[in-house]
Image 1: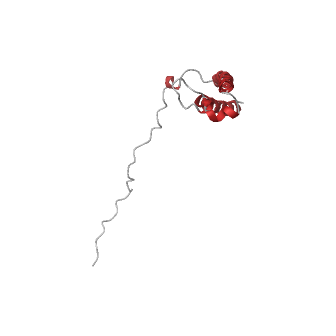
Image 2 (image 1 turned 90 degrees about the vertical axis):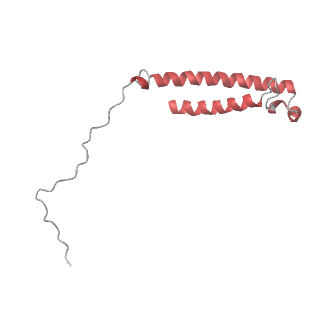
Amino acid sequence: MATVLLVIHLFVTLALIGVVLLQRSEGGGLGIGSSQGMGSFMSGRGTANLLTRTTAILGTAFFVLSLALALLGRGTGLRGSILDVAPTPPAATAPAVPAVPATPAAPSVPTN
């Protein structure tokens, strides 16, 4: 369930970013949605109303999905922060010591 909500949340987030970038800001911004090329499709006012309404719907969906994911994540049984838990020490390992042979080896004498 959480995976499905997370994927939907991702799509809503990307759509919200796109719609916000399409809107015209007071300083001009990208203003892609309000250009003259859109005049044949809708008037400037109609486009602004459509983008404003779409932004409100996507913003509400983003907020609701964020709360739902937070509530689902809370039910996993983990309480508090991961910083509150002391790290587990690594397993103690003995230092590598070369093996000592049981009987000393005879010294090797080079032969000619």
